[in-house]
Length: 254
Image 1: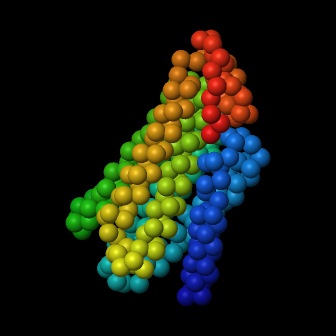
Image 2 (image 1 turned 30 degrees about the horizontal axis):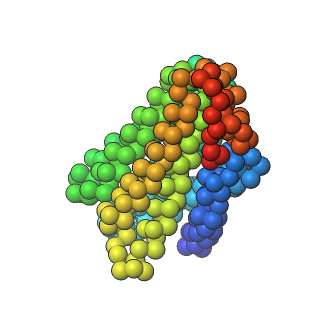
Image 3 (image 1 turned 90 degrees about the vertical axis):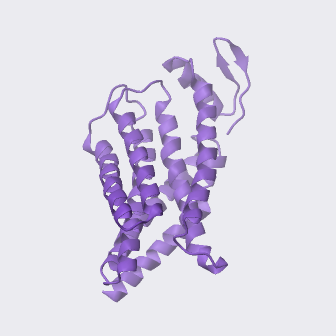
């Protein structure tokens, strides 16, 4: 059994390294381009492997009888669920971009429902053990799960709603990857792994950046009809000026 866990840990480390190396490529390359798609799928594969091996690794923490390691295992398993739900939203939003009505498919609703249920359980667990970090992450997960449910249970607000959801899911997953890297390497700098600041600061800073980026695209799409947005979005992806009914205006390619 010990050998099996070492193998799982080794796979987890390799997947983490791959995710950290490629996560930035889809962010800076042309949206919908070959590099964006290929690097994106490499990242998704690495992120999915991280989530699965992360949960498996936590099983050992929760099973060795040490109360501190058991609590850490519960929290880290939740982080893996959080990361998995985020990347799953990013993929499913892309796969269902032609959706015009609500989705009640289990593949879409199960992850956010699991995230909300696990978040409520983690919040109670955190309160019981006086762990502020657990409560904060639980609240973040419940909020994310609720947002995911709203996306699936409501008709798209406009033709590019899927794109904003894709940005949200993949961006959140990337933030989780960077935060994990910071946390894992914190002891080398003399900091505690579960120091609240280590977890909160990267999430807040990068989260503000992601939100600003999403709002920039949302403003670009605002007021456009489904067909107009589709045409404009394709032009932006191709690096061409975006044309609206109000006249032509150049948009940066990002």
